[in-house]
Length: 463
Ligand code: ARG
Image (cartoon, rainbow, N blue to C red):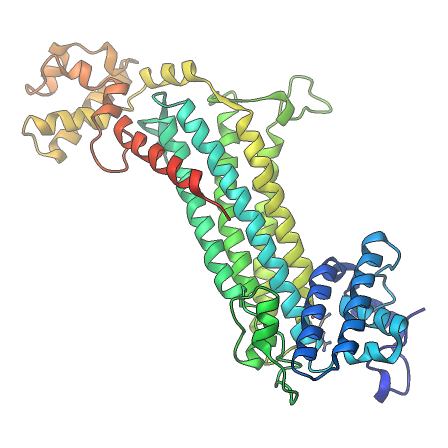
């Protein structure tokens, strides 16, 4: 049986069971009970401080709220479908426990500012947690970058072999991407960490409340000034999910690389058995499911972003019940990205690179063709011409099923007199990497700089 709603005064008939069932959000928003009670306690303390409530009344309400929190934690009070939402359930329980006095808690407050408050508090914690997971993943990447320092791999564009690179360089690219993710979440936190409480339904209240005091009590950096905006805004959630989507893109791109690299076709990495799965029919199979799931879950997070954007786009000010739909999405995004960041660190720890195979692949291809062209440029040949000559040499090799290593100086002279015997050394994969000079390049010096930089940054970093 449903409880009599706290708003039932003007109604002659109770809410139909099926209407309650349809509109109740408690099965989802019950996850916000900690935030909701913390918000209520701060609110009631402020009501006492501003003399809207008598101090002893406020104290009794606060004590009862703490008891209710304990009851929910221990399962004594169940936040079940008979309530419309978490806010009403807690308030109803309060009134049940301390009688009419409990009804004073909602003075100068609305569920509209309450839910915005709860979400902001929840997301604030989520940002902290996700940032910690990002740092952890960056540290694993840095560890691997140090471990494989000096080892080369084929670098790709268009999934076509392009130039030799240091494995460390590739891994550190993800550290940079994750750094921007970290910054985006921190940036998002700035706007997130403002208190909407005291906006009441949307127009403010005639009670002499102190919005700043509640904000301080709940560790906010300030208040959302405009009370209409305070209850209508979900930008903080949109921004959060947008930031989460970008982070997921990064994880998904890396996941895709792991899927490719662990295939027999690439054979670049080995993911340990404990982070791969088998096939129920094909006995030989070993599948990179963790990476595939990260890639797959990325779609879910994008879907959440689109769902929120669509939900918000036509809503007139101020609060509309449509906005209740934001919570399922919010929880799903937080849980999904949290799991993905977490598992990714572990998968990476248990992934090793097949050094030998990659070195072999580097020798039997044309990844240093750009270096050959650059060599000719150094001899005074314009780059476009050097490009053309080298292209012809590649074509010559392809026709004869050979590689640069099989060429001799006489053959090279048929393409350009500028070649000298030192060309053979110049186009060795490790030379290609070592010769790179530009900032941020794949040369050992530049990669080392990055390692030093990130070691310092990540060592000091705290959230
Ligand atoms: N359950 C609602 C939500 O999640 C809380 C705010 C409801 N406000 C209202 N006036 N019905 O959005």
